[in-house]
Length: 261
Image (cartoon, rainbow, N blue to C red):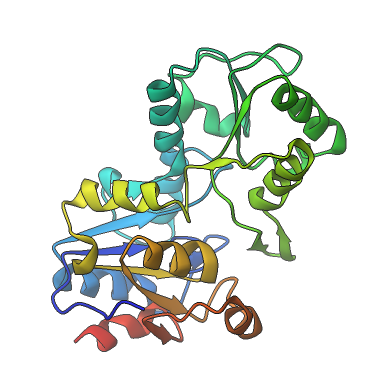
C-alpha cells in the first residue's frame, strides 16, 4: 500500500461513480474538483467507459457541471489504437458500440466472418449475445488476439449492477484458453500512459476510484497511491474480499480535499 504523497504532481480520477452517477453529479463533487486543481500540478480523468466516444464523455462531464479541458480526459481507445499500430495489425474486428468507433478510426476493420489479426472488445450493451461471442470465439481460434478495452466485472446503472466488458472477455478467454490484452484499467500500461500524459512520477500521484480492482488495485500495481470512495459501485464486502488495502477511504470525492490538506 503506497502512502498518499504531499503536494501531489497528479491526481487521477475515475468518472462514473466518482464524479457523477448516470449524469447526476455526486453532492459536492464539482466544488471538490476545483479544490483538487489547486492541490496538484495536473488532473486527469481516467475512465474505462467503452460504450461512448471520448468526445461524448467530455460533453457529459461538462453537462454535469464540471470544468474540464479536452486533454484532461483519457480513455482506453487511444491505447487500443497504439497497441494495434505497434503490433502491425491490419485486420481488426471492432466489437464496440457504434458511438465509440470515431475513436478507433485509425484501425483497419474486418467483419465478423473474416479472418482477423485481433478483436477489440468494448461495451456492446444489448448487442452482447451468445451468437456475437461465438463469432469472436471462432476468430480467436483462427489466430485473432483479444484486446479488451477494459476488464471491469460490472458497473452500476440506474436499475442496478450490470455485467461489464470484463465478464464477456473472461468468457472468451476461458473458451479459447488464452488471456486478453487489457488496454484500460487495471492495465499498468494505461496508468503509465496517464502519468506520462501529465508528466508525473508514480510516487507523486494519487488515483481516486470506486472500483477496488480496476481503480485501487490497478493503480497500486503501477506504484500509485489510491483512494477508495464509498460511492458508485462501492460495496464494503467486495473490498474486504479483494484483499486490496486502499491508501485511504473516504465517503465521497467531496471529502478528498480535506484529507489532502
